[in-house]
Length: 280
Image 1 (cartoon, rainbow, N blue to C red):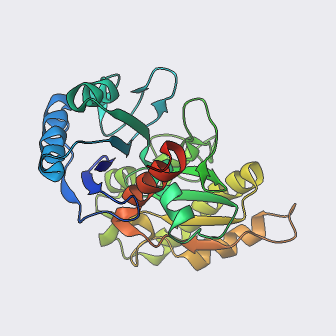
Image 2 (image 1 turned 180 degrees about the vertical axis):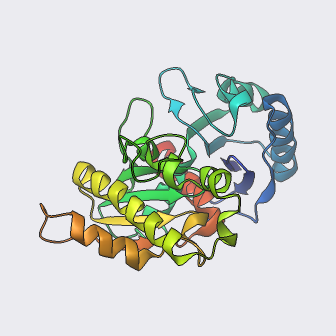
C-alpha cells in the first residue's frame, strides 16, 4: 500500500495505490490554514485509506518551494503556517516509512508529462495559472534537477509597472494570478467577461512564456490551472502574441492545455513513486 497526496493552497487530495499503476478515488478536503490541523487530518485520511495495511511509501506535492537540503517548505503565499514545519519527518515518524515531497506544480507537471498532455515529449514545460502561477521542467519523465524549486511565476515581466500599474508587484504571478486578479478587479476570475481584460492577460502570459521557452527550450508547453478555463485566458491569443515575440527560434513548441484536471498532482506522485522509488 502506497499513499499519494497533493496539498494545494485551497484543496488537499489523498489517494492510495496497491499496484503502482493506478489509484483509488481520492479523498478531498479544504487545506487547513494551520499546520497542526492539516497534519491531523492527513494522518486520519491515510489511516482510513490504508485500512490496516502497512503504508510502504508516501509521496506527494505541496504548494510552495520545497527545500531539498532542509526538507521543509520554505515559502508559501497560501500556507504560511506550514512554512518550516516538519511535515516529512512527522509523517515518517507516524507511519514508520519513507516520505518523498516535491513542489505541487512540479508534481502536476510530472503527471502531465507522463500521463497527460505532455506524454510522448522529451522535455515538457508545465505552467499552471491558477490562484498563483507556478510550473516546472520535466525531462524524460523526471522532474529536472534544482536546488530549491522552479518558480516561473516570480519572473519579472513588467519592471517599471507600466503595463499593470495597480498590480501588487512586477512579477508574472502578481499580474495574472487569480488571487491578485480578484483583489484588483473585485470579482472572481470566472465572473470576468470582459474580453479586453482576457486579451491583455493573454499578452502578459505570453511574455512569461517567451522567457520560459528561451530559458528552458522545451519540446512542448502544457498550460493548466483555473485561469485557463473557458472563462479565462484564451490559449489561441496567447499563442498569437507569443509568435510575435519569439524571433530567435524558427518554430514555437506546441502549446497544449492540461488534460488531468484536479488529479494531475496524484498522477505525478504515482509517476514519481515508480520512477524514483522503484518497483516493488
